[in-house]
Image 1 (cartoon, rainbow, N blue to C red):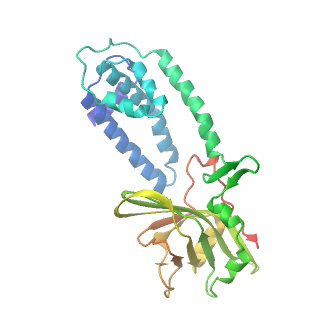
Image 2 (cartoon, rainbow, N blue to C red):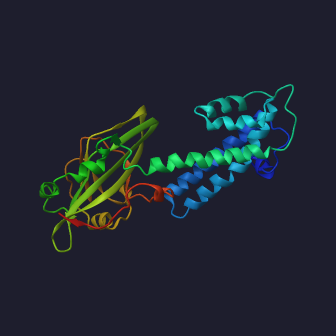
Image 3 (cartoon, helix red, strand yellow):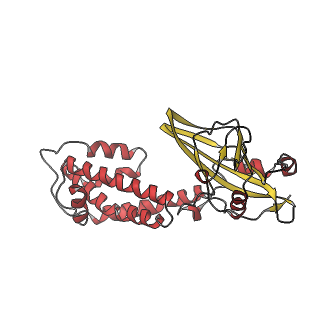
Length: 308
């Protein structure tokens, strides 16, 4: 923790050197703080700008420490610019892990050219990033004659026959929540699932209608596994009035607040999951709170229930 405080106290100091131990202790504490803020941003409303603000302001001590660590290894501070090329971050990490050089670079202020060049490259790099985030879909392909062809889950639901799906709603249910192409991933024991779908129900007049663009995320701890793939569709039969209203209004639904049945309907179940995908043990969120970057991309959630 002392190294972390030291880095912030000397964040405007670019001359001198820092040792390998001091640098990596700061890096570890900084990573832990960032991780905690991300968890708060996901689970607690109002912490978004705190996480973003810390991420921006922590760049200054990070750059200062990196410049001094490079100088301690006997390299010019210009080597920091290597992160702007592919796989450059790996080379930079290798440099930062090396011991103190016998003949270090002469101490001095950080050249203005480094900061200016770094800022220009960051601005240039944001252009393709923003463009990519605004593509029709991450599952799109491009055809010279037809333009973008969307293969996403939303494209599948766009061509669905909602009338036929509405017939499957049980007499005592409020509607069916359908996710056609969920994606699952695993990183060691951390398992995640992401999906977008539609909610087929009836409005106050008794007319069949559909709510589109409903996102869901889910996670659990499981056995060790690595990978990412699409899986089979997921259907949820909604029996609870509160859950049905939340789906139509775009309000967040947390699986911990409802009685979930993962097999046949059980008396008192709020939501019954019908799926070939095994999601037992997952905690899921429907209509999760949108991230701070959501204004850049993605369809806006529309709580309107369109007649079918």
